[in-house]
Each structure stands twice: as structure tokens, then as C-alpha cells.
Image (tube, rainbow, N blue to C red; front, side):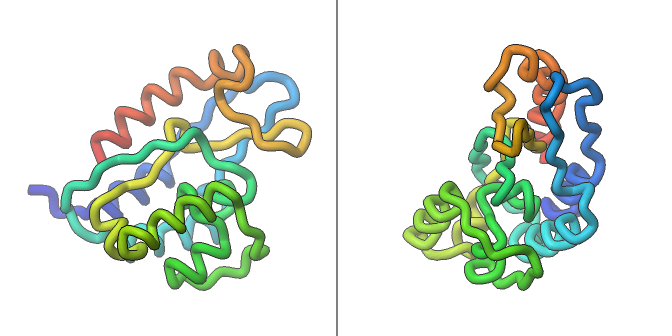
Amino acid sequence: MRSETIADRINGFNSSLDAPKELPHGVELMNPYSDEEAYRLSALFYSKFFSDNNPRTGVFGINPGRFGAGVTGVPFTDPVKMEKDCGIPNHFEKRGELSSDFVYRMIDEVGGPQKFYSKYFLTAICPLGFVKDGKNMNYYDSAALLEATEPFIIETLYQQLDI
């Protein structure tokens, strides 16, 4: 039996992400875990909702966006939801994000964050995000970006499944 919790494993995973080194021209990497405050808040989130070893169903999104997980480090969780729904105060700009609004309406329908996160683990196929020309970019939006990120995606998918 593992003595470390799911939160410990998620936080360890997030702090050790080895981002793809070569991205296509004009594509910028968005790694929220390289920001000390985003990492601290995401670690608080995971400690609050995942400090056990109970099984969860993984729900995979695409990759972080610049107003949600790209800021907070928690998939589908913008700074507004982090504070109001999850009870984790933060000093990030309180800008909502559409997918976060949708997901948290669904979370509320199943009983709120405590109940939801006791059964589900929201994550992303690619745990890091991308921006080009100031706009979100998904890993599959260009053949060059997909080629550059595919080994990273495959490796981190296996790591997340192990969590």
C-alpha cells in the first residue's frame, strides 16, 4: 500500500514536468507550475481534495488555457472558481473562463467540489499549454506542434494514469 497520497503524486508530477524543448516558431509554452504562486495554489487544491488513495475516474481535457489552468495549475479551474467554489483564495485576476464555468456547473449538479473530486480526477492529455499570437493553441492545432509534443504527451499520459 502506498503511503503517499494522490495529492503527493499529483504535486510531484506537476513539479517535475520536463517540457518539450523545441516548439515551432512563434509558439510559446505555458507552464503554470513554473510560477511559484500557481504551483502553491494548485498544491493546496490537490491537498484539499486528493489527500487519500481512493480510486478516481480520470477525465481528460485537451491542454491548459491561458485563463483557466494556465493560471491556476488546476484543469478547468479559473481563479474565480478556485476561490468561490473550491475555497482557495488567490490574488490572480478574477477572470472567468468558459470551460471552467461549464465544468463547475456540472460539478455543482453532482453535489459540489468535495463530492465530485472524491470520485473524479480532472486532468489534460497535455498538462502544459501553448499560446501563439496571444491566443490559446491546442497541441493538435498544427502538425509541427503535435510532432514536437507527441513524445511528451505519451510519457505524461502514462505518468498520469499511474497516479
